[in-house]
Length: 402
Image (tube, rainbow, N blue to C red; front, side):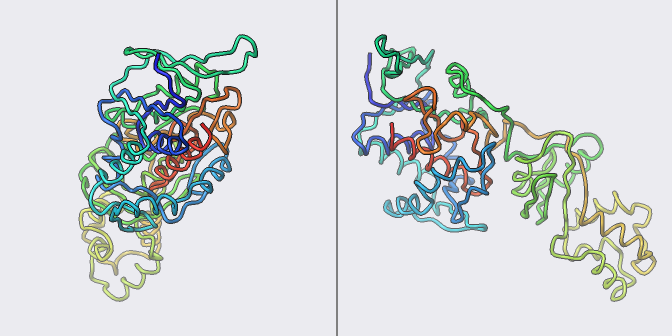
């Protein structure tokens, strides 16, 4: 039997940061991961540049059945704390839109920083470990939890505190699995229904075929569903639509619901079309719209909304017709067939019910010494570095107490 103070299952962002934090307190720490390589999602994130946090972190940037749960951890370890750590390693970074921070060079800089933090504190990291079971040890005298056993194919590991940092179901090719949820079920913790979040929409039928013709085209839009609205790029794909605005909305969208897209969010489209009708009465409508939209998009809209008036000059459009077209452009409603699912989802929505955990320590209320951190918990951030910050903050919270 191999004995440690703390065993962490999962060598991703939350697990590695928790390991370094706990080891800094003098705890002996072992990190186990079934993958052949640590930090795969870190390496691929942000197009290989790792959007490691955001300058504007608030609870409003997170989805959870308990929107207040994340506040304690986010205040306990802030974005400024992580930025200071990044700067102490001399990692160059830059800000993009909406306060998103990315590495100048490579995501490897963040992963190497985490591994160095672990190495400097004698954290033991083992990859390729197939775990068969996890069991709690109970004192026969007091019946109080006295630790946990991790039963793996290469032996039995023993610990006082066990941290589940296995991530979610998103991107299974990078190691996403339901193992953390299985462990939660074994210990009888409440799980909320999981689904893919921050994921592209798909469309079928004639609309899907038409959208596929625009694949690769991106435009700035305001996209909304019943519960949320986001401004940002929308990217047409061969399966439907993606891009930041679509990914954000997908976390709030429910199957069967429609989404609304404002293709010209900075314009009062009707008033602008009236002005253009007076200014350039001989212009075609698609030509006029090309002042603000790509040619391929205006031709697509023409085929949808005014197919019999392709060659009609603006002067011959009734104002009522222009009003209808303006509504289509600023309030285009369409119903996705679904999403691309966990295959390309950046996160898993829901997970371990926060009612089961301490918001201060991430420990189970009913199982002393058992902790859940990161994506496996019912806390999901918006696009833009928020999920990494949750990994750092929840990992730090648990690391201070394990």
